[in-house]
Image 1 (tube, one colour):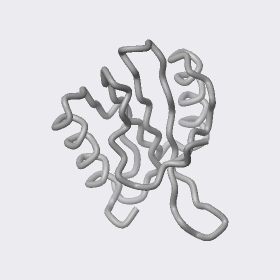
Image 2 (image 1 turned 180 degrees about the vertical axis):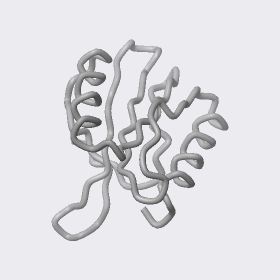
Image 3 (image 1 turned 30 degrees about the vertical axis):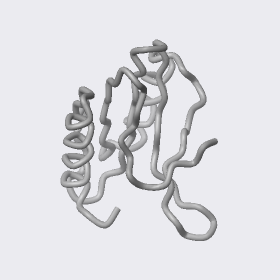
Length: 110
């Protein structure tokens, strides 16, 4: 990320809200350099997805799904484990009827 994490997260939440979704910061981490997990709840299908920032072999940043689980409880368990390892972790939850993540960066299709 080129911006501090708190500014980047605020922009993501704003994009989601402008798109008609509901977004909330479920956990705040380090304001300047915390990592971010984004949980997306698709209200039309009842499914959920989780996204995390990663660096590809070529050095480019990409968002990927660290867990292929689609049940919210399974993703919540993953988030709990990740927060134990990294207390500076941010968690953003987005509820959208179309299941959009509102990321403008590259997303690995998996």
